[in-house]
Amino acid sequence: MCAPSLIHEVRLDLSRRHFLTTLGASIAGVAAASEAERAQEKPVRLPKGFRDIYDLTHTLSPTTPVFPAFKPMQMVERFTIARDGFYANELTFGEHTGTHLDGPIHFVNGGMSADRIPVDRMFAPLAVVSIKARADKDADATVRVDDLIGWEKTHGRIPAGAFVAMYSGWDARIADARRFLNPDAKKTLHFPGFSEEAARFLVKERDIVGVGVDTLSLDTGAAQKFVAHLAFLGAGKYGVELLASLGAVPPAGATLIVGGPKHHGASGGPVRVLAVA
Image (tube, helix red, strand yellow):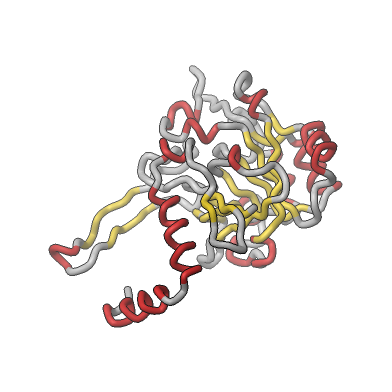
């Protein structure tokens, strides 16, 4: 918490910096948008000299869908301005809640924890591979090697140090946890993910830093084994799950920025993910 005098000085400083004021207002406007509005929102126009910025992060709340192994986020109001002079909540959530990062240690004994991932891997060329047309018809659709090759035929080889994201359109279901998890009568979940073959192709044949999905898992919901997780995280890559608004981002040419978790020994944690293009 900052002293009022310090807050005042910061505000004066920002008022002298038109760029920061404009950028802050733009990002704040995106953050304040409801999930319903997000589907219709346009990229924020940055000040002169920059282009577009996209917020790929879902707003985290107690209604955010979670993998069945975890409890939903809990938020308790602890302090109010009227009673205490300041406002603050107490949050309780699993590391893998909301838009979040999976560090290698999440599946690999002795693997790199999320707080130790080099920061230069958090800035990466973004390749968005769409399987939405198949996912609309088949909840168990996967990113296949031919999807990756098809992307390259259109946009060129996946750049060195890239982050490859699957766009299935699943983020449109975020307001309805049951539709997002999509369980069948036997409680098996059904949502898209990466195939084992595509995962192995990316870590062996291409130079990537990580991958992402707009679902709850790098693997499909119905996967019996975490083959995609093991392929990616076992190769020292990181994953980001529950991404938002990938359909609004150019398939190629954008840069991903991941504000990763940094608590000691983190297997992962909620992140703020942006893309600029």
